[in-house]
Image 1 (tube, rainbow, N blue to C red):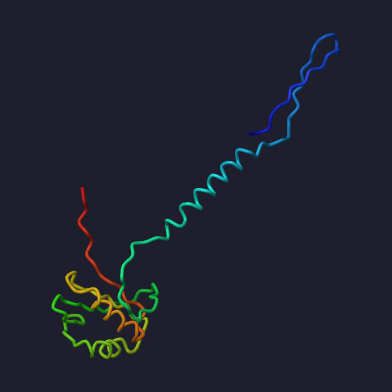
Image 2: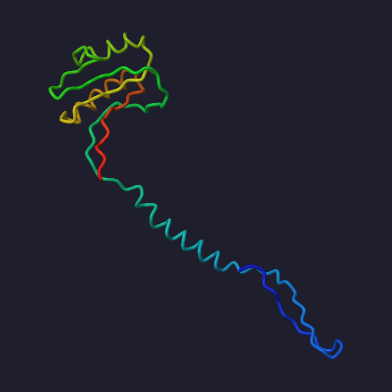
Length: 151
């Protein structure tokens, strides 16, 4: 792989043989090209597999991208019965956006934590997320409990 030494023999100097080693400046790039071609084939085969996911029928929503900056969050809770709470105060679905706008002084960068019972229908959670994002709240996070560690 590296530089090779070339052996040559000389005859005639004082009746004996003298061997001189001269460095050879050629580098064999064939193994390097072979490895690169194998890596290219591996990445060409695995790249399409990484983008495939599990097909699901997701509900429709007016959600906008959420940025990552943190401020003091507000908590919205959805119970299994479908009741909505801001903090510990129950509110109706049609008053949710108006109350949040008043509480945040129309600050769309205020962080909101959405807690939903695991028995609630996914579409109801997405409806609330759509309302919040449609009202301009861009920093909405879903809250969950950590799963128990498995041995």
